[in-house]
Image (cartoon, rainbow, N blue to C red; front, side):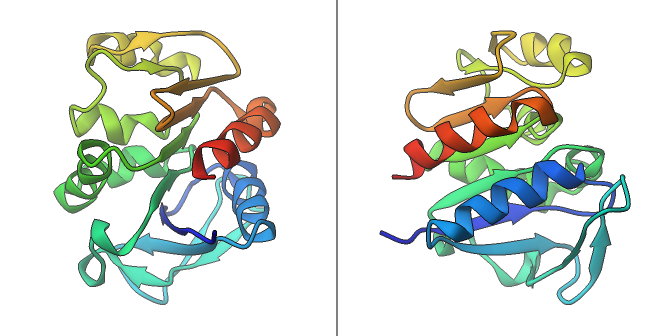
Length: 171
């Protein structure tokens, strides 16, 4: 069954952490919507290999419109978490126990949303202390699945495991 996947993304995302999972999700028939501050804007990956045209602005969407949330890494999540609209959007998915997929620095948005208390999680090594301070149970593993709802990974090398487990959770 096709799922609607919201992707929170802005400039300086990690190219492969966006493009490879999104490609895999689309191959499985899922609908992917890129969300940022401005509809129609083109955002660029930090490696300069990927560009994403934003499908909808954060003001045009509701968490109720989607089944799954995907947060790619890079600097994008740190930029987005400064905007309360993105924080509340992510928080709504966690509170509703909808699937949330976050790789590398992606969990930064979940840290700011204060939704990781008691959750099994991983992320890029530079945010390990932040994940622990947010109350998460840190596991330094390529992919961590918590309560068949939250999927997190550490870095680009973990993408195959991240995709595999994300697709299982999406169903």
